[in-house]
Length: 110
Length: 118
Image (cartoon, rainbow over all chains, first blue to last red; front, top):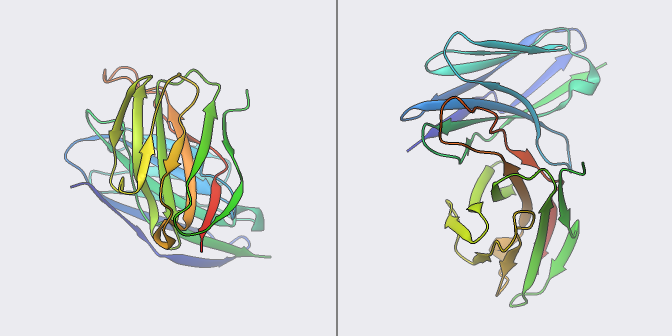
């Protein structure tokens, strides 16, 4: 059974204070690992897909990395508008469905 | 493109009532999904469809039914509403291919329907 564990559950940062969110996973064969951002009362918004260990992707202040056991979402010099819940999900080879973690709620204070 | 749209945005049901949550996508995606999201529990897959006329159960299908008569629409039916079905429901769609060379299979989500059963 595929499993995704995200840590921490919640993270509070000051504006400009860089940090990382963790996503640990177990999957029979990884087709892709997905990061989403979810604002309160909204649907998840796609950020990144990573397909193989060593891969990295960046978007503005966000950088996602992938190893064979975990993924990190690095947030550099965050701003209050980066406050959201960040969701990680894995897709196993041969399957279209995703297994989601419970998310990390990020709050960035000015 | 509007992407994935869901109606209604909010709904309150009484125990035992029925309703249909609507989902439409205009991206010509072959795969569609229904999730529920409870506080602190992440997204759980209810049902999904690989194309018109084909549906399959996800992790938490009990109490729900789906149909897929067109590529665009994937309604979710609650027949006898129970308090345990109080949740936020999200529909998603993707363009999926089993071939590893075709990797643009990201799931795109709708804005959600907040359902309360009293």
